[in-house]
Image (cartoon, rainbow, N blue to C red; front, side, top):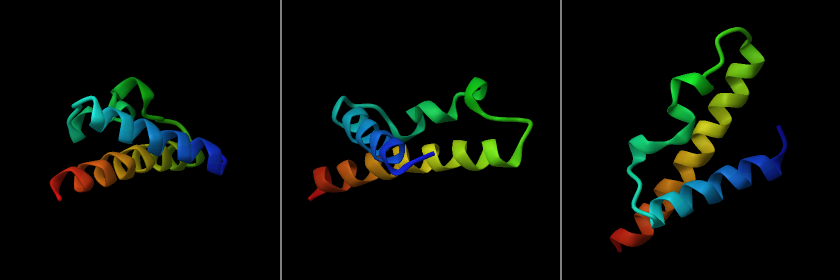
Length: 65
């Protein structure tokens, strides 16, 4: 995974927050996207999960102030 992919996931989180999605709507939390076989795949999945969550949280914080 590269930095562009992480930035894309952050932007997706920001956009989803703008559209009214909840934190629990993280697309990476869908069971079919969770890796079950390899530690490397799990690490990549978690990085994407956290990138979306970070983007969502930044947008959420900006809306609270």
